[in-house]
Length: 308
Ligand code: UDP
Ligand code: MG
Image (cartoon, rainbow, N blue to C red; front, side, top):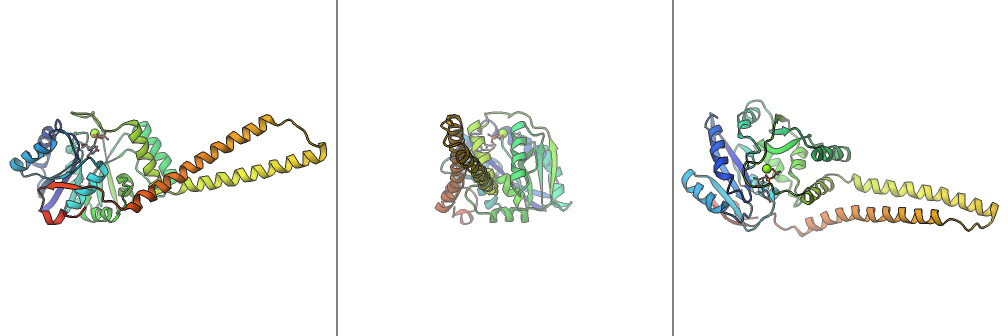
């Protein structure tokens, strides 16, 4: 019997939980040779999610961790993986956008076919394709287009991910960074069953910016390069102006040139400071070394989850 932990980050999922459990259970019952355990990570829900989890713990023996407030899905993923001791971990959303029907194929890939992990991949939307495209150009950690964090991971894979102890976590990048052979399985993502998505455009922008700056310093290099090019162009222009002055004497016009150069350089400087700032922000947050989350309660063996 191989042990498998399902790790499910949940934030205000009271409407999805029963259906999720029912649907997943149907699939798991057909997987022979595995013993499953559910670990729900309650990410500071302010609805009935926690009471429901407690009830499910009594009735069905599920496990849960509960945070003292909302720390974000990334923290929930980390907490869940850390709490797991199984030979295989499956990370899955509670809203059934990650179809449990893929689980048997994923398990087969990891337990029989020698993959380090198996992930679900969907036809990616415009923004996610754009992001992966930019990222893959700027970073040595390549992201699979359309990759989701619906992943089935071997113990070795999980241990490797847990070794990356950074506070600004970008799981898709971390999963790519650790390497291993990953089997990607295509699926079509339906709409959320119940409740609403917790993402907004602003959150997505932040996510993309964090993702880029935590895996690549190429934006900094681009700034350096831009600076060098501007210096070179300015030098050429200075020479031209000097020569013009020597030949024709001082000519007064130049209002447009001055304005254009001023505005352009102003823009470049602010942009450069912004990019620098992004990295300083990362250093700032890492240097505080705060825990990723505060655990308020759990029904997993206490000693294992005391810290963090
Ligand atoms: N989630 C979480 N903490 C958050 C936001 C979301 O644990 O701050 C969970 C949520 O309950 C769900 C999963 O992460 O199980 C994916 O969230 P959502 O469906 O809102 O994201 P989307 O599918 O739109 O990417
Ligand atoms: Mg969703």
